[in-house]
Length: 455
Image 1 (cartoon, rainbow, N blue to C red):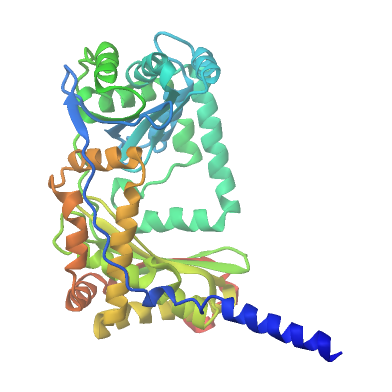
Image 2 (spheres, helix red, strand yellow):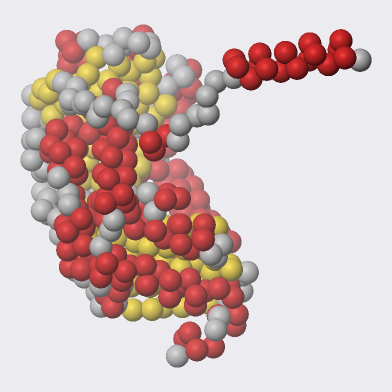
């Protein structure tokens, strides 16, 4: 027996000696700061003045094209809310002056190309992904869809049916329903706060789509981003041949920022086991001197995931929510700061109070040096890695011109974030995050709330 044990002991000691040392926690690793410079992008204009941002990339035999234009639900006419979405669907599926919708689908499928058109609140996009060997076909179809959609009546009716079905089904998605209703309150009195209904969708006709397209699609309102396995000479020639002579006119201006609304609490009763709590208010835009400090504030408050205050306090420490945090969405002239939590109905009042308490504590106590350092480095690192592919590189540089931001906006972003101090964060919290100004919407079963909550 002893002859067996001794060799085993020797083997175990040898294995232990070869075992790598305990891993060092990532936060304690000393690493040099990331160095970063904005990759160069070429810019040229077509004969009609339409700007094109271009970056050649021969890694894959693909070309991507994106048109960005000022359009969206904010520009829907009164009584026709939903028109922007119906128009975008009709552009994609409803054919052009040169080919039917079926023919467009067929040629795209045959060449494994992808073409889409979509609308947001203030901005729309049309995108193409095509094999480089099929670029001539792709540009021809893409330009036709953007410039000369025919809006086949059957396809418009189909788009309306799909929109109506989405409206009818939204009651089955509590989170989607809560956010839709929340924005109606946050943007009260502004076009962004309107919502499509069965009546507004049903009232839309083909001529409305034709008119919406005429008002928003013209060279001075569109910018193009192109990347992929194609030379500048080749793509410039193709775009000039298909879009350069386009001379449509219009005068769409950027919609003004929404006005702030008084703080409020709205409860939308729905018999479900969980509550959705959303609060928000207006915040600094990208052109505001407080933008960088507010970006850091939001990351610490709830945008930074599990280490952020809202997630840590409400989910990690108290176990009151499966999802909680904050969202900071910014445009050049305004921003929106949102806090949210999804919790069981019986904990609604407690989580609502905690959200307010966490917001107030940032303004009164500020943030720690550890939080500040963590947030700034995380934001800068995330920003640097948002330039991972050529599409992102080109689209980001296009967006600077499209939104009227300073030319050095992208290059100076990391230094602006790194220069934020703890006092800056506390100051913008006191100035912009007053809990009395927050617009709250709570969707849930109010019968399960604390009775004192709604008094």
